[in-house]
Amino acid sequence: MSRRFFYVKDILKIALPIIFGNLGFIMIGVGDVIIAGRHSTDTLAAVSLANAIIHCITILGIGILGTISPILSNYRGAKKDTSLYFYPSLKFAFILSLIIGLILLAFIPLIDKIGFEQRLIIMIKDYFFVTAFAVFGGYMHFMAKEYLQAHEIVIFPNILTIFCIFLNVGLNIIFAFGYGVIPEMGAKGLAIASLITRYFMGIVLIIYCYKKLTIKTGKVSGYYKDLIKVGMPSSLAVATEFAAFNIIAVLLGRISGIYAAAHNILCTLTSVAFMVPLAISNAISVKVGYCNGAKMWILLRKFAYTGIKMSVLFMFCSAVIIGIFSNSIIRLFTEDAELIKVCTPIIYLLCTYQVFDGLQVTLSGIFRGLKETKIVFIANFFAYWIVSFPIGCLLGLKLKMNLLGFWYSIGISAILLCSIMYAVMQTKFKKLSRR
Image 1: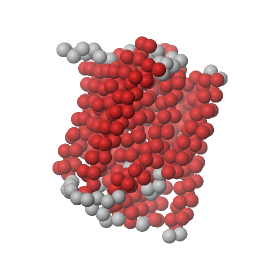
Image 2: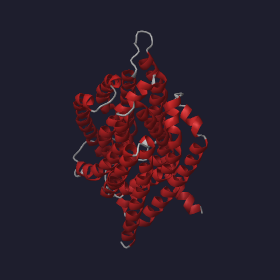
Image 3: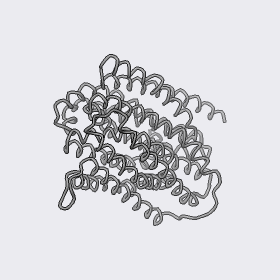
Image 4: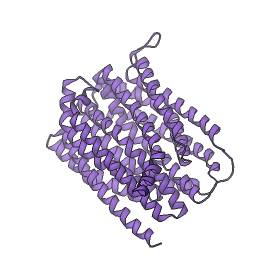
């Protein structure tokens, strides 16, 4: 019993601050949704549709940068000097942000052709334009957070995120509704508030890296190759899932903005609970990465299985709470009767989905630590696009079940995804036990 507690304690030592930080990060998004909803249902719909596309693009860079901590943990386990990798990481984040920012700007003329309601298009374009210039701030923050996490420094970065909840909400209110000489800007104001918050977080964390760690310059070999090799499949896997979720908002948003707004509320709800297993996944990727680099196979498996149990248990408890208090929770976001009517029946599907969502992200963390992420991408693509998307289109569009039909398909994909990844993990562990 005491030995099991050791693994839980060691994971929580890294995961707990990340949990609060991740919750803080998602609460920044929750603040955006709440303020947008309070401004108007059209503002909420416009921001929801804009983010449905923006997230599919920006997540490509986030997915690659998210492999910094497991890769550097592997290097630490292999006794490499990780102080040489700060500047290459920052340079990589800048290049990625430049590429992604240009893609966002290039996408703006296409918004007219998607088929959204005309009154939403100007707001969506304004949101896109501002967000394109916010990407580097977000990537700079994420890169520094990953770099510190690789060295198991997790308290300050996550305290900073919690502080920025209040900063972002204040800025949202000022720029969305107007204050003093600042005019009311609605959706564009929300994007400006996010831009300021992201750059503030990035700059503060970069300064903290200089203060906290020894940073050296010198030649590094194989780092960018590892980032691409491990990060690209991981990035595509996350992008595949994001695209599957966000294409639902785009497809149904063409029918009515109410569906995009409802989908955004539901995704925000599941994202809040998801931050805990995501934090456990981040901790597991660091622990598994270190054990993988040091070739400590027994310890590696112990950390992996402990993390899986922790994630599933938490998400089960979360699902029960959301199911019991579903009506009150939805009303935190909106008082629109039609919006509540759309959300209510789906929230019970969301509760079932959550348990498997917690399992899949933990399994993804294990594979990142093992530096084997191709299976994560393949499993995601198969589950969400080969199986889930056609079922969603059949139920949601052809059988006119709309958002409810797509959420049935999402639940199916989560179960299938977990089954594939868990089976592959078991096979991998059997091979490691023979070494």
